[in-house]
Amino acid sequence: MRKLTFIGFLCVLLLVSCSQEKYPETSSETNKAGVVFKLQKEDYEGNGSRSSENETSLYDQLYYFIVDENGEKVKNIKSYYEASTSEIYTEGLHKGDYRLLVLGIKGNAAEDKAVIYTPERIQDEWLVFPEDLQKPLEAEYFYSQTPFSIIEEQTADGIKETASIPNEIAQKRIISRVDFDFSYHNPYVRNAVTDKNLSFGNVQFYTTLAGNGELSGESNGTLDPVSLNQKTSYFFMPVCSGSSLNGNITISTRNYRKEERRQVYGFEHTTLNGNHIHHIETTVTHPDDKDIVMFITPAAYNAGGHKAILQDDETKEVYTNPSLRKFNTAQPLQVSVTEEGKLHARFYSPRKLSNVLIKMQLPQVSSEYFDLAYFDSIPGFCDFYEEIPLIERSVMCRTESGKVIEISKKTAAELSGAVLKIESDDPFWAKLQEIKHGWNIYWGLYGGDPEKEDGGPVGNWMGIRPVHCRESVALFLNFTYMIDMPEHEQILRDNADQLYDDNKQPVKVEEVLQKMRMARTLQVGLVYPGNGVVGLGGGSTFGCYQQGWFEHYFNTYSCSIMFHELGHVMGYGHSSSFTYGPWAEKLMNNFYVKNIQDMPIDSKNYLNSAQNPHRYK
Image (cartoon, rainbow, N blue to C red; front, side, top):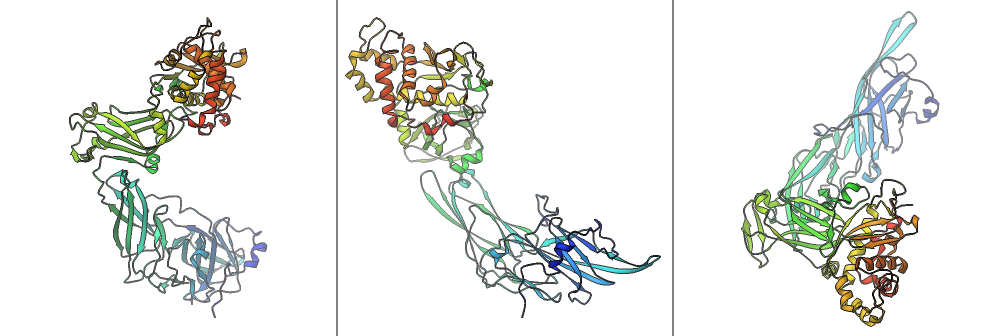
């Protein structure tokens, strides 16, 4: 009966006592001091991207034994394995020829139901997998067989024993790694894959490793399907003679029109060699290969490495430069074709926008718009640049009337006359579309320095930071949305008697609405509250202190500051109802807070600026 063991079996109990003994770094000779074997994992053969795998590395489990020239296990010797240095220490061997047999395991062998036996002879079974494992291996299994000799020499001090062994013992995997690779003609198809599944045909693997390194045994030929969505590399024992690794790869994709496709590709690999990486490549030929549409799934967006605007690490030279950072609240999503033929999408919004279709019209091609790009979602403050496929190749396009036309490859110059438009069924987009009277917004330092801890205050201003710029985007999207809300207009009409100018003369509701809806351009800044001033406004200037920017969603006092300064922007002074009067301090501030749930930016949680580490303390 074979004995099952899960520990190194050569004098394991000697580990504590022997671990204190000092053995030489070199293993060329011994004189009652012992022999040292240095183990080393070897990299996969033919690995194109070589790593540091061939450096000394720890195993999760290690087993070894020594046999004599007859293949019988040597007993009555002292030996142990030092995991920290990957060295085997042995003493007690005498003149003769030997072999050191080592089995190392990296990973969880229990997941593979591996059984480790205790061989008495070199040809005995050592490692055995079940015939019905029916799945790839989870762990890697390393093996080495190293001949060495102990010889005796007569010296003046007596008989000296010398060991002839390698400086390092290379441990090679008995298993192979199979990488399932995919190539696509269209990168947007690659990022539209929803599922990759691998099913196997009849495959027999070796199941048994003997002490001498020979493989035997045979699996039952059945393997359960595995997913290739997150993991595309798997470990297998070598296939038996006459068998092959074969099966089908099923790829499921979707496109921007919500259509799903399922394709099946067969494969066969005749050999699986130990310590090798085998590549099974599938070339995906897809009906959408020639489609122009840039289908930007989350995976495609992440793969593009696109940046974002108004982020905390953006320099003041960038975010205060109106040629680089400026937007109109009626057009927060800016799309264009660059001089290089790239699609550029920049979004001034704290919220993402979903299901965005961008259409193009090229006068030299057709009077119709055709689908150009589809975003599953556009992140808030995105800054997307990606080359239009039409620059690289001829494409197939779908027009608004439903026709499919082919357009030949174009130069960037030929795309300069392109006209773009945006469509989305996102309710958020519907709200943004209701902003009819947009204001132009950009940012200024007004002498402050955001790089200083106190904002480098100059007079009543300090250096605005991106965390405040983002909040101003939220505020002015909401404000310019609010001015066209029927409920807003009604509250003005219901309180018309509370609207008066600096001379206490009544102001008509129509005049108020006209001034609120007038096209304006504001340079937004951050007010320094140290002088007792919390807001500044008038003409093209607008500013508020930090608390106002962070709390305009819910704090009626903060809102009254915002509307006080907007009253100045509209041309009213402190004697009017639009600053220290009911318009700013009663009507508008309360309406804004009470109706925040109906605004485009309906929550502080999109930005959570009060918790931002880059705010002023």
